[in-house]
Image (cartoon, rainbow, N blue to C red; front, side):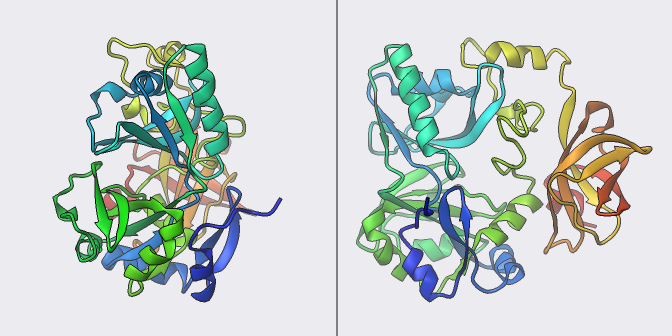
Length: 365
């Protein structure tokens, strides 16, 4: 089956993008070089097409309760214009996907943004549980009819402010506003996946060209830089740092236990997670700093004193720090910061140390 093409595909093609199939979407990996695009976001501003992310809209009297019971976060505490990072879980507490839920600032609806390729599955899951719990909701999958870009970097807010009717600089992190960019009605949220300030902008897919023209002078960036930026910040990649079948983990193992709220509520996976808090976490995701200029890749073995105690899930040569970094799961006994470990890379063993994330803070000397 041919990959989906984002609304800005033709613009990317004209800009000389190299493409790859990502989650069923034909997305740009890079336009210039990954390092140059990475540097633009850390030092100035860059623009990413993130239209491959899902767009699920949940509306109606039962919308809040549906999301409140399907995620481990207290969605009831989210006010219009606010957003929350959370996840969908199986009944055994395993993460299906991590998501952002936006309470629309002007409409009586929630916008749920899952990762690429997950929209149809999670659309079905929402509908299934709404019917099971007899909730009065309307659920729509608007992925194909919605465009989404991320403008990220220390100059991102000023850059978007020049095009917006509203004051983007007045948004707090994880809040949004409905405003026009040029003549296009958009939802602008102060969120992102790079570790830098910036916004993510949702708009009708048919207005993609108009939105793109507003940012013609902004450096285009692809998935390659998006990956190195998120990894330096210690952010998870769905399908790689966790996967419900191939890399099954609960939020505590994956290092996002902060999304779990047990207070006075029931949610899918609660009983399993209560067990995890009682000392049953056997593996934990850790950050690793490698001692040699060798890149750890997904699946590489992590060892201690010659015994395998884990595996790498993500790794790269950090463009900002100029050192190799990685994320990986290790037995909990070896998860303490400062623990000396080793990573098997091809035919040799490379020494590594457990460090805190974000790497940008823990590995800056």
